[in-house]
Image 1 (cartoon, one colour):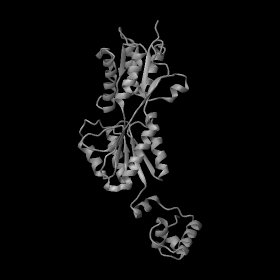
Image 2 (cartoon, helix red, strand yellow):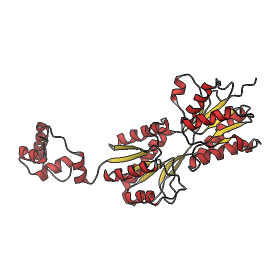
Image 3 (spheres, helix red, strand yellow):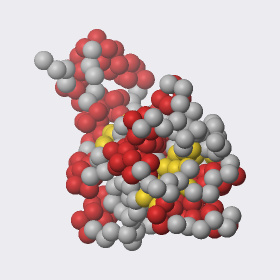
Image 4 (cartoon, helix red, strand yellow):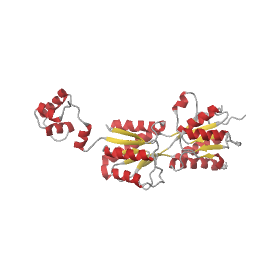
Length: 341
């Protein structure tokens, strides 16, 4: 049978209120009495209930983290950064994965509210231009600090940490152009998300600055999944006037491209050059040196967690929004080269 506070109070010869003060480190307790209670706790092998303690202190020391793709290395590194800072401040994390599903995200928000979490770090599934009353009400009704990571929610002002997607895409397209490419295809993500739109802007900007026409036939609209990227790559490889290079907007889509290349015996960069956005370590492990735009993901997680902690420490008095833009870095590994035949 589980040991209760009543059992400890009886063993120590004190009141239950005294035991509670010792457990929660609140209120004055004589040192002699405190030692009696601690001795009883040790002898009875008592483990305090986190739920019970949170009810008595009104603090759960728990924050919620909501991501759309837990299997994506991009979010894995973000979570790592969040976790590192959370550990330093003795904060617990409840992690929710939405699979890019709006209903799952709503469910996660409701679940976290029931768990009395103190704040949320979230990469929203909802596109920022889609007004959804139930979703916005869910955020508003939480009544706790919310920090966005690389996602925007229109109609609401939240602090957040974001990547300069325009610069990242511009640098990637420019690298292909400087390698000698003039026919450069792009596989986008969901165009109702700001990161995808900004990456397309960066791609077009690089072409325009270098006096290369932006041709619609080389713009392929994807959805961040490797399945769609696989099908699009097959389509690109069958084009009569096919491009010599492809800029791919996400790491997961790179996998789809590489699968299509493998099936069609396409060599990189001899037959087709390619640059991705965000890295995939497994490609390096198997010797496929693919150039990529590297977003500072671990740093993003750390900074998002620090912003949230600052909001928690300042309580409702904090009114200043913090929006931090991080610069991506282009990592060239040779797949961007133009091999003349």
